[in-house]
Amino acid sequence: MPLPTLHCSATNCIHNYYERCTATHIRVSGGDTVNEYKTNCETYRRGKRTNPEDAHSDTWLDPARLEPHVEMADLNTDRAAPQILCDAQNCNYNNNFICRARTVMIRLPRNKRCNCMTFMTGNDTQE
Image (cartoon, rainbow, N blue to C red):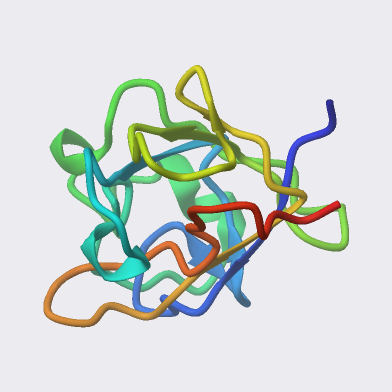
């Protein structure tokens, strides 16, 4: 199955480059929540960069803040497509902790959380 298309409005995240995510993997938490407002992109890190090639430069980020498995994604595609690791147990798109939605929307931080607006329970999934 191809990686999902990721749209991210958290433009104040160090991994965000023109609403594309430069991380190769992101983690979404949610546990046993039943709505998207209790989900969170755990890979979100507040900060700015002007060039995606700076991803591994310590001039724009303290390397200790980077998670060891996060590398830079290929931005030559229309939308970057990181693998989404998810523990939101009640989301229909969660299959063995991997998000299976074709399109995922991460919303700008609200109350210090970047919500996954694609979270869905019930029978209303993308075809």
